[in-house]
Amino acid sequence: MKTRLFWILFLSGMAGVVSLLLIDLSKLIALLPAQTEVPTITPLIKILGLIQPAVILLAAVLIGIALSPKVGLSAPFAECLAAGGGRCFPALRPQVVPGLIGGIVGTLCVVLTSAVVMPFLMKESTERIHKLQGVFPIAMRLLYGGITEELLIRWGLMTLLVWVAWRVLQRRATKPTTICFVLAILLSAFMFGVGHLPAALMLLPELTAPVIIFVIVANSAFGVVTGYLYWKYGLEAAMIAHVFGHVLLATASYIGAYF
Image (cartoon, rainbow, N blue to C red; front, top):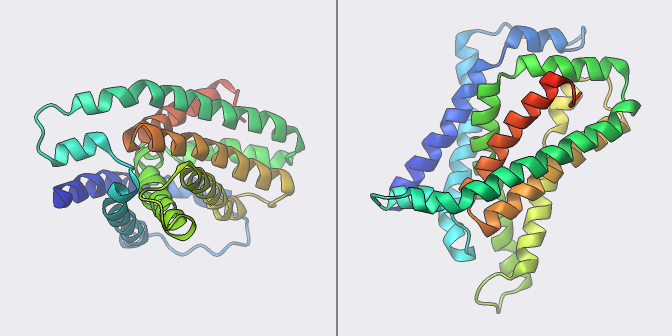
């Protein structure tokens, strides 16, 4: 079963990794500062660029498979498929509504954060952020953001943090308690937010305090929502929220409500 679960999760995540090839590199390069040295982008370089995220994904999937049963976390739908169950949608059904609600809540957090921070951003920064919407196609955001990032941050990182908190803080407990999950959710969400700063530093003219606040707070808030869903409902609920959140954010951006 574990081997089947590995391939289900890994190949699902690889769909997101491969979707990185959809990024419009010409538009992305055009947004870089003029003095930035950009190597010639060949098809081989683009393919080689997938190796690092694929290796990280591999590690995250293996960590989740090894530790999730020990801490009481799960991916109910994927695990049902791995077990060869004929009817797996009942395992998914309880996660759909919480996932959709989580997507709405997470999106509101991002939109509200942008509404507060936007007046303090440089005009050039807001223009570049708006142009980025055309660089990253919606298919890539749904596949990489909604599936791959949840495997990396929730299934891999958050599961590991719950296990570490349990073994360090509660060695005598037979299973991790609420505090372990809360700490893991908050820390993994914060790391998720901070992890977006390098891209912001590369693409924006200046990494000002409002930009840093927006990047960390908006992404961390969404990470808290999906972390809670993973804990209470399962990995697929977090994925549904993340995918639906990207759909809502793309819609909000189109109508001008999000930058």
